[in-house]
Image (cartoon, rainbow, N blue to C red; front, side, top):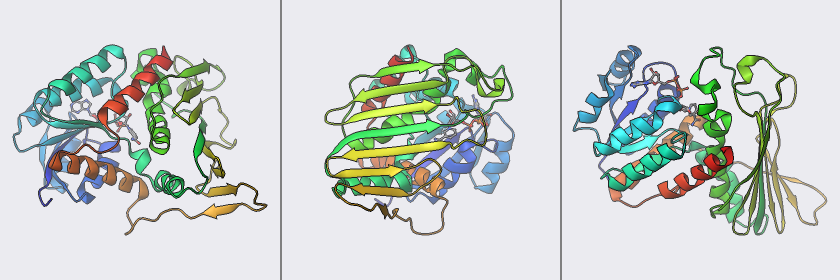
Length: 335
Ligand SMILES: NC(=O)c1ccc[n+]([C@@H]2O[C@H](COP(=O)([O-])OP(=O)(O)OC[C@H]3O[C@@H](n4cnc5c(N)ncnc54)[C@H](O)[C@@H]3O)[C@@H](O)[C@H]2O)c1
């Protein structure tokens, strides 16, 4: 598989996810050639010069560029569906930032565009490629806790503050942080369980206390249960924690028939509780070679997997139909 996929990155005109993570992840990827960058922001010319790539201010012009095989869409959430369908209609492969879209109508449009296009669509879900998630997966596959029965993933902390109170991200139509971020963790649970949930049961509420920059319209607490085949996924997304000095972050608990793996708030340690054992153990994390930033590495791996899929035609996980089905559950939960 010597050939490379020529990529154009949309949204690469300022200091953001496209330039800080997707661009270096693409440069490091074995099967990618960064051919072009696009942004309405003039900063794109500097980034393009530095990376020896073409610069486009007009997305439609980048889509007309026959040299480009795949487009990475990293514009704000409200443009994802439109920018992805435009690329699919022009026959390009698309690696799309989460969330793939914002409502059921857009989801139908996206599915339709995927069905009609010669190009493939993938949502970039780099959380499953982080050392932490890959390590948990590794220990599950080794049978360290027997058969998996329950996954608990919890986030508690403030939402990212948004100074512009008129921002789209503060509006109800954005779906709040629920739509903005939850797919990462639902996909992570699917990565561990390897079975798709068929339904969602969700409880949400709103605590109005806190600075307006951390609130926005809609709920700021969700607790959701996703029954899977033999596994139940409990997901709690609590952005009501408004004081800076409270413990916050992510907690993961994986309960199996022979034990439990736990990662606590503020720690990356994987603590193993073996059935019947008096002492806990710390499970070492898998290590990446070289000194690349682990988050950039997670993007590199996701981008390279999609490039390999494009080159050999074999769909890799997470498969697009599964991702869109998971996202549909999040939309149902929002409703
Ligand atoms: N996977 C992750 O960990 C992660 C982290 C952060 C952000 N994101 C996602 O990435 C997306 C981008 O987030 P961000 O914080 O980098 O946003 P941002 O607003 O900082 O950057 C978006 C860029 O898109 C450009 N843009 C918008 N419309 C355009 C158009 N029509 N043509 C050309 N350029 C256009 C803007 O000028 C801007 O430079 C969001 O959807 C967000 O959900 C993902």
